[in-house]
Amino acid sequence: MPLILSGNVATATASTTYDVDNSCRFQDSDSSEMSRAIASTGSNTTWTVSAWVKRVELGQSSPIFGTGDGNANNDFRMMFFNADDHIQCTYYNSGYTFDVITSRVFRDCSAWYHICILFDTTESTAADRVKIFVNGVKETSFGTASYPNEDAAFNSGNTSYTHFVNDMGGRNIRGSHYIAELVYIDGTASAVTNFGEFDSDSPTIWKPIDVSGLSVGTNGVYLDFKDSANLGNAVDGGTDFTESNLDAQNQTTDTCTNNFCTLNPLVVNSGLTFSEGNLNLVASNANYRHAISTIAVQSGKWYAEFKAISGFSSVDKSVGIYRTDNNYSATTGLGNYTTGTTWSYGAHGDVRTNNGVSQTGVGTFTNGDIIAVAMDLDNNKLYFAKNNTWINSGDPESGATGTGSYAISSGDFYHFAVTSISSGGAGLWSSNFGNPPYANSSDAADANGYGAFEYAPPSGYLSLCTKNLGSDGG
Image (cartoon, rainbow, N blue to C red; front, side):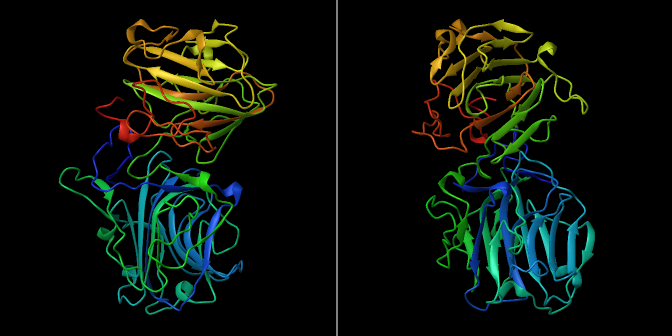
């Protein structure tokens, strides 16, 4: 499969002539969705759905776009991930009228996938009636391939039905993911090249292109999620979608042209629960457990903030960095502090570096405090701050001098990490790598203009996103 732009995040730094500014972050536990009634009769035989999607939670049904009447036995699942992490297109009406499911699974929670489904029952060849493309390449292997009958009509254009984003036909089955550049074209099985391209500079990286000029048909829609006060705005001029349990904080700048770091749910331990686009973490009864960032870096200067939301008055939780040379065990998870692979600042007021307690009495923190972590991998120094006051009177801009810093080993790759030092009680961390799931009082970007932090990153330090990888670090 070709690389998606920002897919293999350590290397996919290809330039693009078209930037996607925003995505919408959906969370199943928040019951977040969008919907609109179908206003005019459109095509019930032919359509296209295209979307860029970054997965968050695996092993659950995650609808992206479809129609339904709210009846548990009647919905058109135009595009969704099923509970086994396959892409599926199907019509269910007290049973499957047709069902097309990819053989491949899609379980990368660090990458953006482009999914495009072309549907046209007027095609004489059964396999041409449902075509699924991922990252510009047509899927040809299917675990299930039961195609609709020729000229069969479904409810995609009926005025008695409703379009849904992130709800399976109005049945209250929702997913957790980021969605960008959602396009539904009514009446045309459009070419996948209307939504993305390979080019001579990056022949294996599928890139988005400007879709604003596409004709979306009678009931089509283009959602770009640029209006934070109206995330369901139909920029094509059609009927807007109504948002449910979504607000301005669900708009992000984590997109298919600038992929931001999140916490990685694929490297998990018992007692860790992820939410809000894998930016929130609850560590409950988890002794010596780590949640690490999706992107690891070996050079450059990097900045992130972590907000202690709740549970910090009685439990011991930490943030810091994690070295990638540690062995991972499916039984015990990531190693603990005695293995010498973590550097962290704990709510109890200790900083632990490399192997055991390094410094005590540096200041406790509790609910509402924001802990900043600044990694200087050019000088092998690490700095911590509480509410913009650097521990040890540290100066992250001091370079090789390392004023108030903690030494880290050279030549290794490092993740940001959220950690549970001791069991007993739950603590909710909220991570900010540049796209916080909470509202800042003032958003501060890095020197390249990326990220939205509570406090200004020190000079030379960047948010961990793919636009900043390459010549600027990493």
